[in-house]
Image (tube, rainbow, N blue to C red; front, side):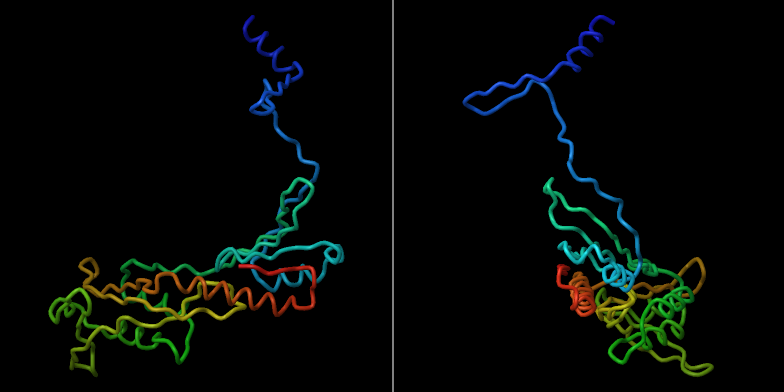
Length: 241
């Protein structure tokens, strides 16, 4: 008890500082208290909401701000450095993206539904080809026709009774929803794999990203271009990525 009382008295005592050749030292740990007050960030889900917010704030016209494109799904609005040499985060924008089980084998019915609902159509991608293959591949034929680790062959249904041996369409170019809906979704390469599903007796399919993440840079560039276009008349907001 006596030791605790002494320690408490020492804590309440004023700090002592000593100047030496190696610098200035204190006998207590001190925490700097900021001069500026900062508000909690506002959460949003669309780039359009961010643009509307910036254009609707009269207080913004005399202060500089930065819109930072952190990732394909996250953008934030931050202030310039204040007196504490810190930045205030005013807005955080998180894209609502449908989840797709990349890198996982799922039964072909679930796979087809996911591709139909979470990938964009277009002439420059292979969505229709992938759906046609997944919907017609015959169970039990993947191993029969071969898999050399690079390409696969399987049989797909042709008409009511006939089968046709074909190569699995891989790699393929696809446009999944992976960034904000206001900007173009990047087209990128995927490895398409199929295998027999022993539990269901059917076929399981999977997609693996094959562009090394290059789509992320394209998505961030698309977001930056969108914001620069819609904020071109706002002089005190800079967009960076």
